[in-house]
Image (cartoon, rainbow, N blue to C red; front, side, top):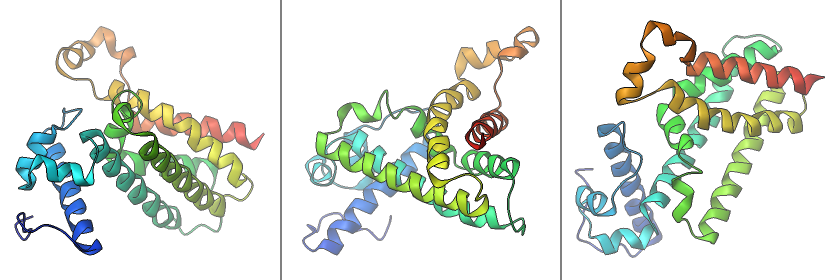
Length: 220
């Protein structure tokens, strides 16, 4: 970020994209510094990005729109990692157990993706314009289709459409399981009590089991 020049107005497409990416990088840094935060303040984002608040609004309509773009980046990164992870075992064809394990492992390796997904319907989507929401949902559909194709390539007995259904129903799993697996403050202390062990969740383990169940159903 030190190489960024904050006071020169972006005029070219390249300069505007540089500003946008700078804001996204700044937002990521802020999220890393505050793991429990569920939102960003535009004022603080502008300050840390060395931009005025009005300039931030040239690129994003709200702080939620910034986080939505960070989330799209996270989904894109996750999708790109799937092919590598799926090919790593060297098998000619994967099993449903292999796919479920890779699904859960690659998700668990991206806590920011899971964190933002868990607040997507309740917080992030609340202040998006209709146009921005359509763009976001189209991105999600495209990424879901690409991930389904990657899974189908390793397990042809389950169709691309069926894998898309699996991923569709995995989304609410992430939304629910991530906060349950990562309780904060008093909830974390309470759930640590031995007599409440049965209420604890293990995100990666539970996602893997749930996705495996979904795939077995898709194969029927």
